[in-house]
Image (cartoon, rainbow, N blue to C red; front, side):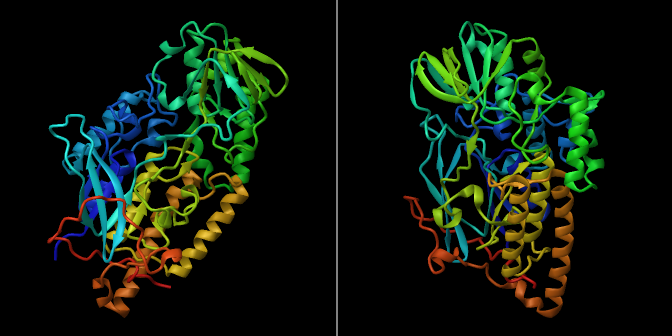
Length: 495
């Protein structure tokens, strides 16, 4: 029997972690990457326009809390490495574990559809050189792991603010260096990490102080507290209930730097560990020196001026919308994504409820670093597709997803609850889930050892139970004579 064929969409940190875990399980892995090099958002400008990385970008989580477990970052590196160092680290990771040769670069996935017992994945070659660019090709895989990230599709204010603006408007996704702000009056809208970095960068070259506008506040955590990376104590506190952790952390933060209101910023909409904090040392420094000035939300645009909700108005030359990103998976049909991809019900934030051979790695918002999370998700997905982990029954998965959703709403509210995770708790939970799944697999093998040889499930989402999602591919699928049936997660289900 040949090896199970798995397509991994994306060669960023999530895709590379997925590829390594799948290779460790002995599976046949192809990584499909639209860009020209590995690293995803950290890879910088490779001609695709996908990466939001800018010149001053650094890790916001310390290297010890960020590195992959089996590939430590060099000891001589700073605690918070630059984007260039992280990009090199990910490229070295791909080389070290034999992933680079599995990546098909300049390959844009345009369609993923279920076709009987396989997935048909259509890929177009987007190489800039017309001589090397090729026609779209459709190939068959036994499973698909989606790892294309969610910082690619800029989200603009919707609905747009009333009025018109005579100056320039740009999204933070397109920012690279502060040169574009030299001698100009700048307004940055947003309170996330990118908003703070951009406001600080612009404040060194702008005409007058940079205005920082937001309707809601956030907690600002410096990168260092008491001489150590601020996230260094996170693991020790993880044993406590999150409400107690919140009280302890907020008290420490208030004693160390004060409240956001002390710097003229809006009061945070929720407590620490409920809304994603902003990690920055430099924004507090620039605020206290008047080089960045806080403003409330925008009321309307008025030619060359912006009117704020407190009735004040300022002359502005350029508005930077640091307003986040939408989850975008245009290659998947709506029947799989649902009405809102951000609310997609995934078991353990990894497996599609309708068909676990469609898995997702990196579709989350973490209270901590991203790399350990995608590494843990990748190992779970690989254990399932490799056949040594059995899922609970579909009904048990559905109940678990609903419970997870309810718990997330209680903690984080209605904004992306299915994507929110508690970093330390989640990273500890997934290895336990793998062990539980291994026990389920062992019980299933004892009761019916032949079931693992069954063909993959072809169940479509409930709304189209008899029809797989329609393809947008324009080419006929190529025959794959070596494709074999994947280990069937559905056949291995255990109540």
